[in-house]
Length: 192
Length: 192
DNA sequence: GCAAAAACGGAACGTTGTTCCGTATCGTTT
DNA sequence: AAACGATACGGAACAACGTTCCGTTTTTGC
Image 1 (cartoon, rainbow over the protein chains, first blue to last red):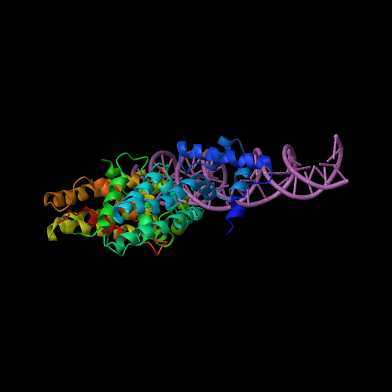
Image 2 (cartoon, chains in turn purple, green, brown, orange):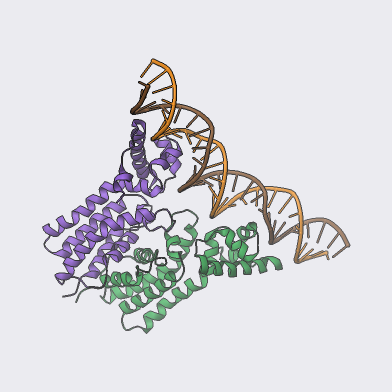
């Protein structure tokens, strides 16, 4: 793939420094103003021009991905570990989904942007899916093989649903996605 | 309330005609281009200037509400009827939610716009909630009273969750919110 | 008919994401 | 160390959007 070329550090020192500053600035702005903060705000925070942002990160999605890549990867890697350390596959699934929800809920607006069809976030959507759906599939398959859950719900659908449930969790203290996600996962379980 | 003043037909004949045209045009554009279609497109479709739209409907939300008001009201009114005609309260809840999902899913982008914090859709959000949460509460209470569902999930939360699950259902044939909503409602049911 | 009231159209504003290009800086080569 | 090409920079400029504003047109009541 082109991972290398995309992630490659710039040749020049100032460019490398700016890219770092940009990542830090973006992370800071995302925390205070949410993921949908204007690009100009991030540029200002980093003390950098607009052109610089777009050279390093061809689109907003790429910047968001770069900021959260480590956490998404960590979540993906936690899947197999949970499967190994949990009493049942369903418990592992439950814990892993909870990890995912915690991640989404603590990033203002990220869940919303994930499903947004505002073209330009496709890359972001795709990255999350590429990274997490395989893990979810593994957990789901394990639970299904153990006869713990109903079949018919795919990993993509589940991830998508959980992501959707997390939309708007910030900015509304009366809405707690964790409870609903809990109900959803409970609904997956077979009776008996 | 100010329902009367807001819904009052304009005094002048041309204004009344334009308001009608606008509603028809908006409905047509929403079907073809989705609820997020630019205001200018609706104005063009109605053969009307921008000012005219904003005089009749102070904000996009008001236009959307006006277009869907009847259907939302119909959904609200179906609640008590279903409760009377269904075998169990849980069945009534299930059918009513299904009605709501059908409504949302057939309006491109409506679910998305409902939760959008893009300020300006607050009115829309509020209208849906005002109209539907009481009905949902009634169904939920009935099911709880019959001991059919777990307590702890409020009507607001449930409506919000179901709405969220419907986001992005169009423009993605691989995502079927109905199945997930089914799982969610199943998760509400008490075992045994 | 005529004036006042009501409503109209669309230019203009503010905010966004993104592109473009003249200018500045860096790193290498003589 | 000077100079030159490659690299990167800043921010003006563009397009799309929601919304506001106001000079002009249409309707209505007399």
